[in-house]
Image (cartoon, rainbow, N blue to C red; front, top):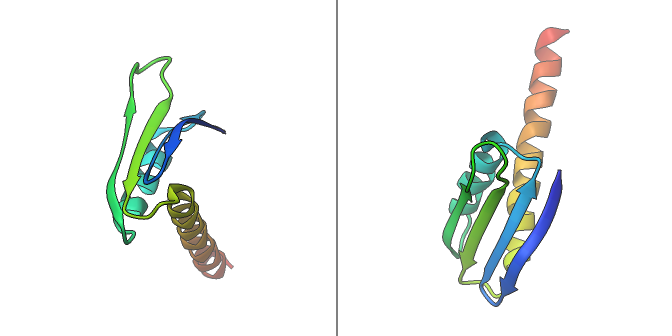
Length: 91
């Protein structure tokens, strides 16, 4: 997966997640929406066959990168918990 920043300014960031699917994009969008200060978090795939997910995130916080990183870290932590729970159950 590759991340390409298309636009970044105070309180707003637009980026592509090349090689990603709706699954990851929906998780990230949901996590961003539950974050404090997020005004808008959405994505679009302009073409179903050759398009890449393009995220638009707007925040009351000046540094939107921190908001996105925090959301990614939360998703990672959730999957670590899931992995640990699964590992305990299948032993």
